[in-house]
Image (cartoon, rainbow, N blue to C red):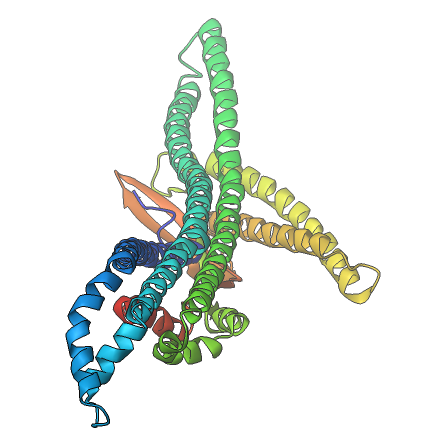
Length: 473
């Protein structure tokens, strides 16, 4: 069976955006995973450095208690040797011995500064690791969780609306098949009534006429049911396309939010790296320069400008009504065939006139909005424009059905074929010994797709994440 959703431009663009959004989500998850590894490295490095600082501190404390008595004895003899030499020039080793004797704790104090430096570095690495977890990883996980729930909700809306379109499409074909069978049976009964007028009794004739009346009522009911399902196809199709457009815009907003989130994480990451001092700042200069060139608003503007899809022709497929009477090779009486088609054309004409009046009213409203400054309600204008699109679509579908029936009637009456712009947009396909008709209706279309931020952003992100060792040294 033909899929009514395959060639829809809205559906194609929405699926493209979903694929792009999935790539963006994967990228965000990978970045978050790498940041988590970096945070773990910082915290583990801080723990190791803290242990070394404590170990060195304990060693120094022990040395303060023991080094002075130990130094006195071994230094007595070298000192005497130095004194005995009187005014002779002292060597560097001799001066060192004198310095250590007079200041036995100076070397220990120097190593104490080393220990304090280790503690400070450990504290910096610990703060960096915790800051990455609290200010980048945790908010990212929260945003991704919210985005995932939102996307699931949007996908459910789209799937529900798409199922309605497919269901209506199938219902139309099923109702058509039922109507065709009923019409054949009715015609057989009508032929039986006409052929047996002279051969049956009055009572049997009344019985046959009663059956014919019931068959006529049943046929009219099934015909109306088929007709209404065909009209309902217009509403379900519009609802599905509107759902696609609304969900598309929602996903686009989620992608904008993710771009800003990645930028904010990168900016905060840079600020924390900068506190490590001049050495880390020197290593970070290239990244900092790249980040300073980032204009997130400019990225979003480029996103909207470069991804605009304009002047794209959007053609939607709609099933047309197919009746038994349209088959010129059937056994139906020609007069009843023409009469039945004319009654269907009359019904279509009434609906066309009503839709035309509705369109004229909506055009007048839109004209009033544009000419009168008092009408500044954007929402009302949007709703009116949507109603205008729906009315135009309904009118096109009605006119296509009318043209198709008029062409059959003209052939029956041996008149010239009517002309209509939709004549080249009506197509047919066969399926299980039945021929189905559908029309391609052109409609306005404008949607946008998402692009990723500028190369400066990507370069900065990848550069940071690929240099964890440089940032830790």
